Length: 355
Image 1: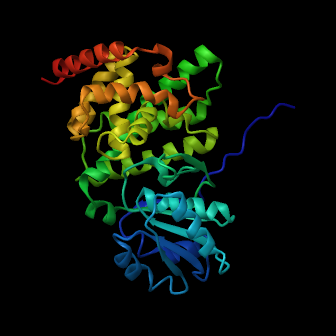
Image 2: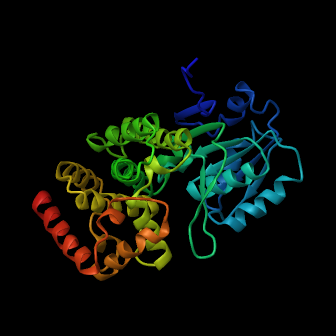
Image 3: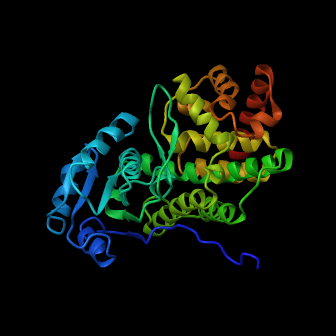
């Protein structure tokens, strides 16, 4: 008999609203994640004190750990601390670095993890992947998908605006990543998971033409839900492929070469836009450029403090960051002069479109 359906691991809870952190204790109890609040709460150094004040009335039995976050060493150190007591769950509250640190430590010791996002900079809030700095690089490590995903819009609103807007660049890069995945299927026979692709694409489409901005609760809610959908797409496919292609190779190359500025979402947004231009998909290129420009996100290397020559070096180095990936960058295999010529055409196309 043929298999008629498949089982997909997803969070038990997905909640996007204001005041979510203050209600964390009842939420965990109602969903039978932790009836008595015996959880390890992991916070970053920035908003940790404010978060602790909010959770103490309903999570009095919790232990609170403050992590610098974002590194493999910090995650391993946290994991060692988690062994001191039996916890119902690890609750990571903060931005991507704090959540990924908590996610990796929880997975290492088989403890359920609750992801509570206070910013919308990337899609790691719901993914089975922890990206952590280690030995000069920023590799991605497999982890369990969070058992619950919560986004507190009060904290998102009070956070740095540009940091949250970076999540728009992260989502738009899905468009380029999915095109790279299709290219890999055509050229290399790589399998594309249709359900994962649908989730990743739907999130990008929800944002690309949306008229709202970060001052609009409706827009912010859709942004949060779309980032969560991207995380689920990676969980379903068992790979970051639905959300990571040449766009992310460019970001990783910038990090390894220590070139440029900007956050993860800003870098992959520009990377996705450039890869879409390389692909020759001008309608999509114009759509993405308009959206990034409308939200004040980088569209030129100079916006990330990169010279043209530095950006050429980044694109040349990009394939080395993911040797197992086939993207438009590997497909074209451009020389330095070829990249420089395409970059000049790219800048001209942007000026013509946005003037």
